[in-house]
Image (cartoon, rainbow, N blue to C red):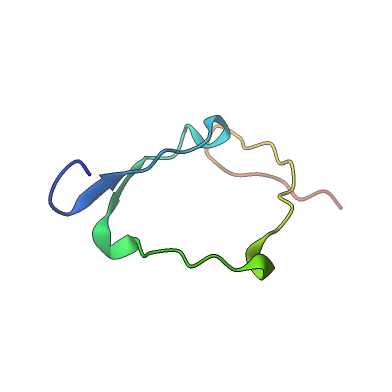
Length: 55
């Protein structure tokens, strides 16, 4: 917590270009659920945080 209404989130290095401070209205407690487990795709983000989907 960095203030009364903001939290700094620990993000992985691959997301280092994303702002790491969030207002409490954007956050909620996570309830674990096995169906939420996904295998992330390995994507390469461009400098402007966009990416291309291969055909």
